[in-house]
Image (tube, rainbow, N blue to C red; front, top):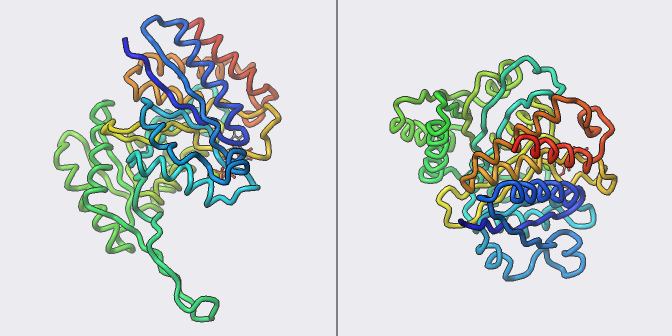
Amino acid sequence: MTTHKIAVIPGDGIGPEVVNEAVKVLELLKKLDPSFEIEFETFDWSSEYYLRHGKMMPEDALDTLKKYDAILFGAIGDKRVPDDVTIWELIMPIRKNFKQYINLRPVKLLKGVPCRYMDENIDFVIVRENAEGEYSNSGGRLYPGMEQEIAVQNTIITRTGTKKVARFAFEYAKRQGKRTVTSATKSNAIIHSMKLWDEAVNEVGKDFPAIHLQSYYIDALAAYFVLRPGDFEVVVASNLFGDILSDLGSAVVGGLGLSPSANLNPEGDFPSMFEPVHGSAPDIAGKGIANPIAQIWSAALMLEHLGREDLAAVILDAIEQVLVQKEVRTPDLGGSSTTSEMGSSIRAAIQQLQ
Ligand code: ATP
Ligand code: MG
């Protein structure tokens, strides 16, 4: 039996509060299922760590993390530390060095979630390119401070990078028995980078004749997300478009408290990282009222990645049961329950299911 070795980085704000609940869920599964072995090591790399040591994590942090099968991450962000420090010194080095070039975000409306799409069957994933695209540091400014000042920001789209992301999307669709992949584009107006994106996605699509590829312009696609979110199965998008669509998708199915994500290294030569879409939420940190579902669901995505789809399904069933019962709800869902009450209810539901 393999023991899954997990590095846990709780981070800042509500990060540690919700990570604590997710780890307890995993500990419970380990207790209930003799075929499931998991070990955790917690790292206190965070803004507090930065304030004490002048850096977000130690020099050998990546070497340390490399030895784990996966990383469970909470959230980073603190008003005492600039955003570019927290992002560029912790999240980005992990994503880049571990070649986590896929950001996978399920957009699934869980049963029992109060929202305006309650009668629709919304269940799709966004496959976002996570390593290149619009978020590059290539560019610069001319005539700084002058009236004629110009800023140039370059988008890096590569044929290889796009094909890898597209291939992941098609393979995911095939594995999950989905029939359509939707590509987000804007090649009518962004005529260099997005044309290459389209070409690369089309090229990969030819290897999957059973799956229908449709391309939508990002503006129209954003509208369709709102007008008919039940129509999508797998959406593949560049870094910027995927970022925007992810937040939109999250809002459609009930908000940040319910939105998990995975930063995947599909080849498996480095650990992948699992984290909620939300940030450290300083406005509610320390109050014990954050919704832990996004983090617990992220842990479920981690189990899927580790080959335990069965346990991931148990977690999701338990979350849905608690939501359907409507008795325990954190404030973001209109209730007054605490983080730990939500966590305990989910664990109680798991105990009944297992
Ligand atoms: P970051 O820059 O770290 O992404 P942000 O300012 O974009 O942070 P979040 O920290 O994600 O935003 O918080 C946005 C809003 O959503 C806040 O009002 C926060 O309280 C709320 N929120 C985020 N996560 C949760 C959660 N798990 N439970 C309840 N409310 C949440
Ligand atoms: Mg944010």
